Image (tube, rainbow, N blue to C red; front, side, top):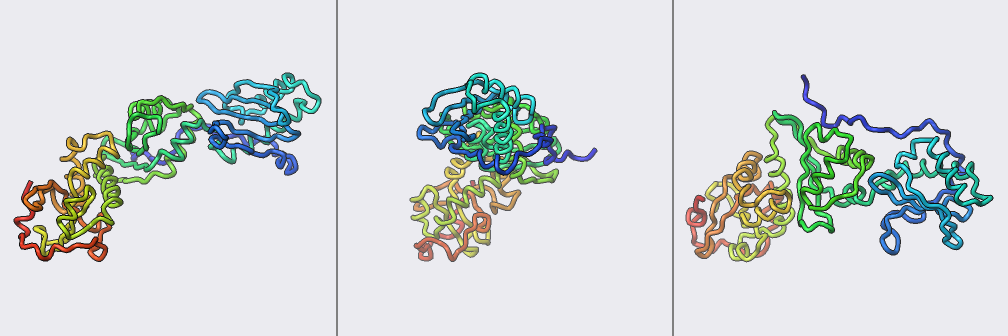
Length: 368
C-alpha cells in the first residue's frame, strides 16, 4: 500500500455556489467599515454597512456568530442574536434570520426580502476574505503565531510539525512544536489543535471546527515535505536550529577569540590551517545552542544535546561532535559548524585577528 499523501485534504465542507449572485449595483452597497481588531478598543467585531444607514456587526466565537443590527444614525440597537456559523451556506437560514431581523426591527425600510438580499451579499463578501469568518484566536494563530510547518514520512507514518509562537496571553515564552500524526492531521475536529495549544501554552483557545478547517488549509499550503524513510523528527529540528543559529551568528563571526568569548552569540571562525579538522570551522557555544532548542521546541536544551549533535552531523550542518574550545585558559563547550551551513564567509568576519596567537590547534581544541 502506498504512503499517504500529506497534502491530501480531509473530508471538509465546501461553500455552496448554487445561489444566484446579486447584481453589481447591490454588491456596492455592502461595505466593510471595521475589521476585527481595528476598533479603538481593539474590538473583535466585523462591522458592515449594509446600506440605508444600517450597520451589521458580527463577532465570531467557536460555536456561533454574535450578530447585531444597529441604526447608524443614533446607534440604536434594533436586533441581536447568536447565529449558527454555517449560515453562509444556507439560503434557508438566511431567510430565517432575515425574517427575525425584520420582525425585531419593525421598520418599513427593513423588510425581510431586502434583509435576505443583504445577507446573501454579505455571505459572498465574507467568503472572499475567509479570515473574517474566523475567531480572533484562530485568525491570530494563522496570521501571527505560525512560524513554520514541516512534514516528514518515516517508517511509523506521516508526522506534521508546526512551529507556533507563544501568544501574549500565555505564561510560556518562546516557540513550541505542535505534532500531528496522520489521523490528527486529517481530522475535521478542532479538539486536537485546541488540546495541543493548551498543552504547550497553558491557554485555552477559542477555536471551532470551521476555524480548524481554515487553519488546516493555511498550514497545509505552507508546509515543506521531507518524503524519505530516513527523515526523522531530529533531522527536522536540526534544520530548524541551524536556521535560527545562522540568523543570530552570521554577523557575529570573528577570528578574535576574545571577541568570541565576550559575546553570547559569538561565532569563532577558524581557517582550515588552524582547525583540527583541516577544513574551515565555525565554533558556536553550546549554551547558545541550548537556548535555541528551548526556544524552538519543548525539549530540554541539555537533555536533547546527544540527539541534536547526531542530527546536526548527519545532515552536514556540523563537521564533528561537540568539543571544548580553550580561550585564555577557559574551556568552552562548542559545536563545530560548517561555515556554509551558517551562511558565514571569511570575507564578512568582524574586526579582530587571531593570527598572532601562538596557541596550536591541538591546544585550542580538546575532545569532549
